Image (cartoon, rainbow, N blue to C red; front, side, top):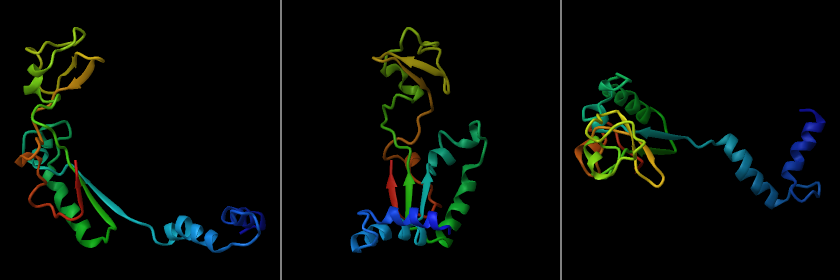
Length: 166
């Protein structure tokens, strides 16, 4: 390393500018630099591997992705078995039964006059505008991942460890 670069790096660690690295500066350097570089923390975030997306009401094989959702389970399980992640998190789609995005709940809210569709004409995957304030543009989906239902649960074949969150 060039001497100028070395001095520049040293100045970052020598926070009080006394040309020495004291205990507090070393601890700071260890916790904020060395430990992160030498012992990085790994996390695995698993998103929406839920029944409704795999075989349920919003099965992704029927959506524009046209993929078989079950195919993600084996690779995820293999990673969980073969890699020692420091943390594993599962993110869940998790809606109340009266969620604004469900097509069958369209009657629960008034549409804004600027909405391109009426409640009677709206269909799944259409976009409507609900009255505000402010007016809210909303894509309409089939009922899916309703809290505490089979559809909101992680698929039975997915290995589970770590932290669940909605």
